[in-house]
Image (cartoon, rainbow, N blue to C red):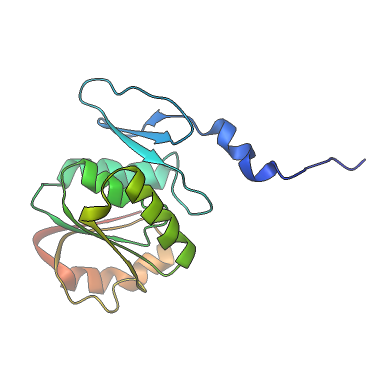
Length: 172
């Protein structure tokens, strides 16, 4: 017997996407849910649409946890393969104000811009299409990438070259 799917399958996953505390400070909250931050919490609002990055994925929460450990307000940060923009927003909520978010996927760039606007951090995040770090000429204090392992492998040398002294490369 055929099961009627209708058009709601695209939104079905939303039922299971609830606010969740992914690090000591950061609570990731989907736009359609309510949440009031407790003392010491920051709320990262997100609608990932079709882009990767809801915060409930282990690789995403690990990257956010590492960001929380290392980010200083003076840091210059680049989020490579930003997807939904979640890591760039995390860096912003942790105090960084000089952030670049890149992706090769047009849809991700669009979704990330919408999420930056939702979190009022669009002014401090530069969004650019880019293939990893290939055309990058600036140096960074933090390079973060939550992308496929074999792709991370392709950018390790570039990341090393672009990091300032005592810089951090966070990859998952």
